[in-house]
Amino acid sequence: MEEQKPLESPPQEGAEAGEITPREKITVKKLKLLVGALAAVVLVVGLYLANQFWISPAVRIQARSSGDHPLAPGFSLTDITGKPLKLSDYQGKVVMLDFWATWCGPCRIEIPGFIELQKRYGGQGFAIIGISMDDSSEPVVDFYRQLQMNYPVAVGNERLGELYGGVLGLPTTLLIGRDGRIYAKHVGAADIDVFEAEIKQLLAMSAGTEATSFQRAGRVFAEDKVELGNPAEIESEVPGVDLSKLSADQKEGFKKQLAGQQCTCGCKFTLLKCRQVDRACGVSRKLAQEQLEAFLKKKTSSAVTQ
Image (cartoon, rainbow, N blue to C red; front, side, top):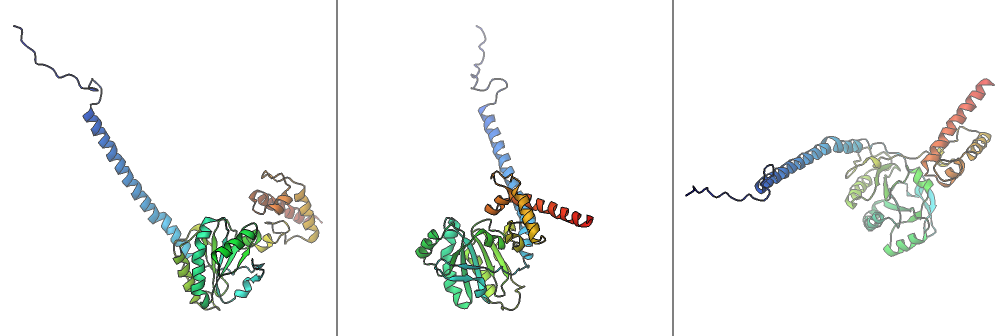
């Protein structure tokens, strides 16, 4: 009889030479999960360190450097009820100046809280002024009546926004102290507790002196820095370009020069027309300012040769 050989186990699926067995696949999967978990931990730690040593200090530095409190530019408007609205009439009060619009969701969410703040602190010398950036007053009037807003609202314009440094996002809310200086600026919606904490500080300070001990509440971002526009540029016949160094005749000559050049922003207007119809256009503003520099140099060189 032939010697019987022991029976061999049939090869498992995927167990041929060079292939990974199911058990090995499980091990590799576990290793991948472990590596992924470690990578996630490293990422979290990295983000934490970035927040502590990069982002947070930047926020703290901005908060510490907000001691520059410029005087709020004056303005005179007519509110949506037909009454005159002048910032100068609020002298000695703490004023919240809120740039908003009816089509702005975060603005609409904030306003009920502002109504409560007006009720709570109105008797202590606090006042809110709403500046709507809507194109017309109709939706503003409807919204005003619907929410029974208890503070004046007027429809603003680009010029007023530029005086306050440009309203690049809505809502943009500024807090003005009793001394008429701007102490805080919030671009985007903020928690009502943040506003209340700042309002209390300003109400406790006297009207005659700058509130140097004022501290911003909440987080402070780069866009919250208080910067005002240049009135000479804003009121200029060529918006965004300071023509104060030109005589009346020179202004007319410079305007003719801009009227003879095409704007490159795609508007198909001349440089002068683009500045007049689109104050926010950065292309025409830069080109017009460059043209002014060249115009002034030409004027200076002509004066020297005479």
